[in-house]
Length: 76
Image (tube, rainbow, N blue to C red):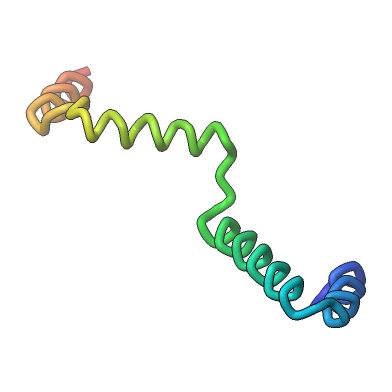
């Protein structure tokens, strides 16, 4: 199932020189790759990058810290 807009441009692309068709295909592959990697907002991507930085720098709670936190909240 393709939209009319997509069908129209693909028909025109088919008349372009081969090099330009290859460039169009590369750009569509890049768009597809971005889509397959999820629909994250820029803010979500930034948050994930900050989290990854924290892990790389060792800025995370130890298992003991997490267990202590859970035990405090279970007592209430």
